[in-house]
Length: 189
Image (cartoon, rainbow, N blue to C red):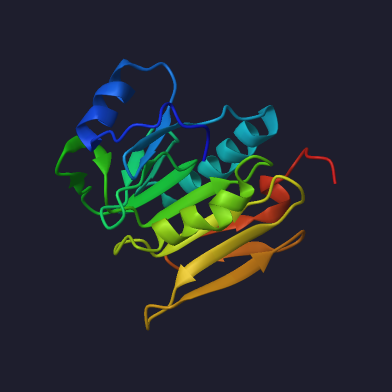
């Protein structure tokens, strides 16, 4: 999570007003507003590669792929954030306090970075797992060609699978897979 704007207990409505007036994106949690760091060209390229691959496979079906402009809120914890890629299947459920915010993603994707990796793998992953509709969280490494897929199992537990060069990251929650070599095409190894 980025730096806090101020040590103040903002309401979600305060956050929405702040976000509406801002030229940059922020996360919201526990009454605090956190600035989100800008990404590198590599981060942006990985986000587009994942979005493009998912869009090509899901087009025409019930699932829709969204960019990092879509805000997702975890109602159970209050976290409001912007995943790098979000997939929703079926009708969007909007936050009762913000029609521009979605509360029922099927899959979220986070491209890791030096500044966010620990948060994305720890606290943020824990928040995401509290979304009832969420079936998978995909973590895309910024260091090496590796894609991790965290998926909810039939008994409600979460399992992790890792995919590397020459492999396809299967996302059982979607009729889609990410070919690691294609996602990382043009990246140094």
